[in-house]
Image (cartoon, rainbow, N blue to C red):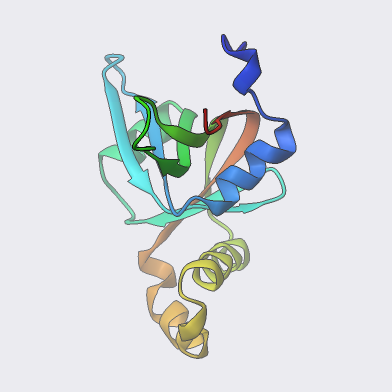
Length: 155
């Protein structure tokens, strides 16, 4: 995707770092009537894949199973300097293709790396919790087909 403001465009590596620092991203999809649907989710990146977990059913999954093309927006550090009328920010946008993880070994891996990122202090309880929840938890992965990053620096 071509960015209009080339002076704010980041490299691919910088965009990946913005994504990695973000606590969450907004997953955007279109349903069978082309109606938009967006939902914030916590992601973890491993190489060119993003993992998330969720319930086994729901509107989001109905859409993803029928239309796996997605867009995810991540917003990083944001500041509003008092001496000007602008925002200082960084963001990354991913275009990708989602697929459900059905192999229990990979599901467990996805849950582990998500847990290590978001609740590292509770990993002593991971094995027990995962054994109880694995069959009731969906894990999805999204291939990063394209990523762009944008940064507005302090004026």
